[in-house]
Length: 116
Image (tube, rainbow, N blue to C red):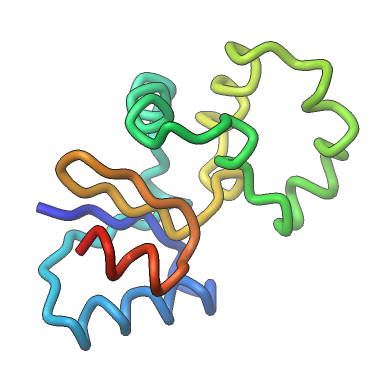
């Protein structure tokens, strides 16, 4: 079962869910603000994704900017970054799609088409 962490008010998430529906993809929607991934889950997703950990941060989010994370992240250890990401779902880039052996961050139609 495909899982999609998203924020209901996010326009990119709405586009992604619409795309999934139009392509008849069955998925479980998870509200990232209410049920954000814990540290262990984030570590697993990071490993599966093959992406740099910094890509998991929602750099356009209000909380990211308020915390001035663009200045702080370069000095943080991976453990600190994982703890921070696990502390608040609004720090995690979305939508976050989890397929059997793939993890996609953000919505790029061509990438989603390849995986799904």
